[in-house]
Length: 76
Figure 1 (cartoon, rainbow, N blue to C red):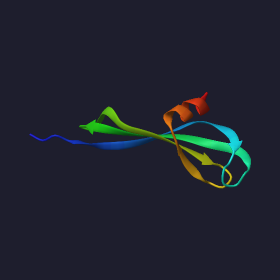
Figure 2: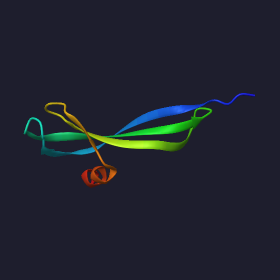
Figure 3: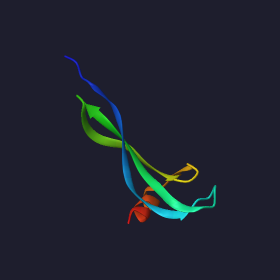
Figure 4: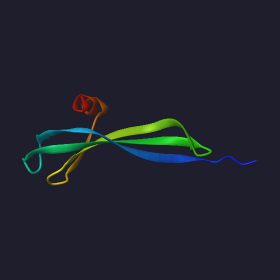
């Protein structure tokens, strides 16, 4: 008998917003991304082990990690 288990990371694009970048000081669109790591059993996702959010400037490409609370506020 054998058991197959592992971790899978899934990326989801969320709607972003226009904002001023801290690095390039341009008022441009920022892309919001959710990264969720899920525990899998026999290649079936069972539960989420971690979740993080990133926001990326479309002008200079600077990526910043943000909290779940900030991501919910931006996605509205």
